[in-house]
Amino acid sequence: MSTHRSPSIPLLAAAVLALAMTAAPARPVLAQTPLPTAQDTAKSPWVVNSGGTTPTSSRSTGPAAADSAYIREAASISQLQIRLGTMAGQRSSTAAVKDFARQMVSDHNSMQQQWTSLASRNGLPAAVTLNSIQQQTMARLTRLSGTEFDRSYMDAMVVGHEEDAATFGRIGAGAQSAEVKRLAASGETKTEAHLALARQVAGQLGATGAVATSTPAPNRNAGAGRRRDGDKGNVADGRYAQELAYGHMMEVQLAQMAQKRSSNPKVKQFANQMEDDFSKWQRRWTDLASRHGDVKVRSNLGPLHRQKIERLEKASKGNFDRVYVDIVSENLGSVVPYLQKEGRAAKSGDVRKAVDEELPLVREKLDAAKRLDRQVQVSGKGKDKE
View 1 (cartoon, rainbow, N blue to C red):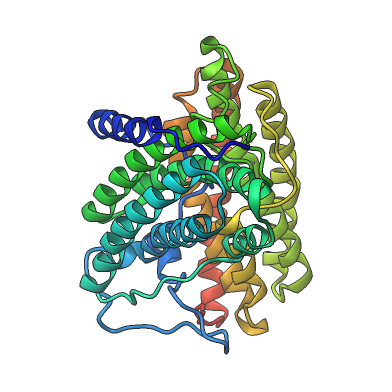
View 2: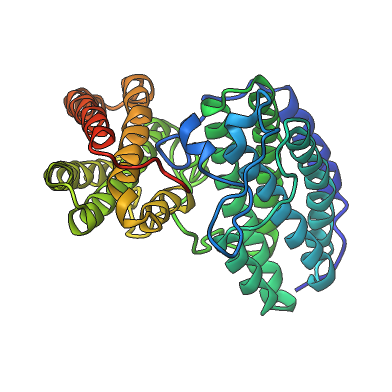
């Protein structure tokens, strides 16, 4: 592989960033439906200690406090890019890759400082940690060197920035704080510019962008270069169906756990019905995803979905029923507007039809979960102490 320094890369980076900064943000696509609610973010700490308890702060009352999980997620994106960029600067054998990595470190240092500063101003811990998937990416690249490292790093950059752009879009759509929304919009714009540059550099190396990840990247730009322009609407609908399929997969797993561990017959009955109904709809959405853009739904869930499952796994016996019903209520409460807004805006008739048919079911399950939640409280179950 040639190590000739390509003078076009810095110029291309400046041009792409200038163009991206002036473009109006596109409609966000959710990376992992459904969106966390204020209740959910309050139960998603920045740091979990070895004892499994969540440190809290009486100062966490600023306007962005309810968006704590979003801020942490955004900051961890930059933390990963800084670490990988630093590694690439040390290990890469290609000038273009080194230039790209240097820009990632610089840009993401600035982005991370904005997010951690926001956290500090709102009484939130500013420490940033990587999740298990991010740590696995670090570990995998640490084992590589030379040409193999360069290609794998750029593969990770293409796929990672597709996912990150979608994540910033989701954060912007779900955040309550105006400042979080503003930083998310800025992050999405910068990330899409980084993605364009990553594809350029990856193309020079012959990298494919087909790096294994926790879930396929649900980004509106993914595959745009491989499909005809007329197919973009269908691909977007396929990604939408994929997101619903993953959300339903999570509900099925939660329901299966509840049937085994619940001490309340009504909760067990509710969970049994949830498994039956959401298994059917998961299959339907998986089929629709495959029909539109051949979007795949795999068996492994992404970090936000796994976080909810782990939250239920950690619930104590006396608190299990309440935690399960809380999670279902929060989850379905965010699915309803996702069906109403994004679903009814789908370009494909079969997707819109599925949305219209499922929406009454989701509303019915949400109402049932809320009623069950009140019954569980009356029966003396405690609040979630996580």
